[in-house]
Length: 383
Image (cartoon, rainbow, N blue to C red):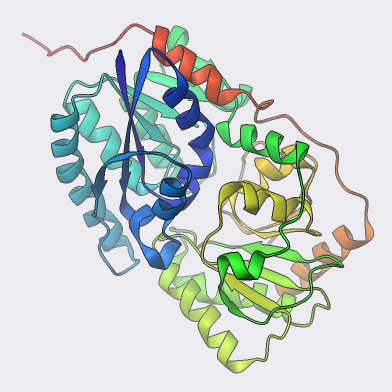
């Protein structure tokens, strides 16, 4: 039986691979080794670990490696600590394959540790382009990885251009679309959202619609993160509809984003705003489905919202150049432009569903491939 070690390092990473974890766990030829690390363990970012445990997964190791600071130095040092800690975890677990997800700085630690320990590495969501530090991390992990489970045809072509072996590149689609498909088939609204998830702020009535906001800092623009979030707040402050706002990721610049939100809440009486830290993946997707649309710069707007046909106001450069459906309106960091896009969505029709990131069976596809692929080990160079 093959031991498959999956490392979850952040809140969005879990929702990206939940169906894959289920498929590995259910596969008779695979053993799941689930490691939770970095911001996925921290309460201030929503304690993703609580959701993971509630879903019934056994966690074999926890890695606390995030340094406080939410700046570039903290991110670099957290990556270094991650390499040290994960190397010890891998030595103890002796996995046959390690899986790392996407492009966050913490995933680099997973890739480096596995690669230098001659453990075959599988990368999910490689080959995508965004034009910021995430793209550098993503392509670097691609070069360290042995198997590539990409989410689109465009991504597959880029991984091929990076020189990877075609026989180990598979367009499986994104596992997060698997969840979106299930929610699309059962989209009952969660009436007890405030009771279940708490949060702070007002408790607006959601019966007549609402907007969801998820805006993260951009690591190459951290000096502007507070100003950028204030532009979004200015655009939505006078909105008549309820606003459900989700806290930013741990990325460098998050302190500016968080401080901007807190200061704005103290200055203005935001009677139609409610703020959440985190939410179970399925509940979050149900929330999106019943909303007027998503506002911000999260990749969920590019991926899951495309599949669900949810309109998106995509702000700034964080998702630059990513493949997208017809559901996205791109705007800059300008409150007037954000307002205009919101009005366009409110007065328009719902966009068509797009399957650019898969059709809802990625988890099972990847699990089956993990059971069949030959185990590749890096060879020591001799002279």
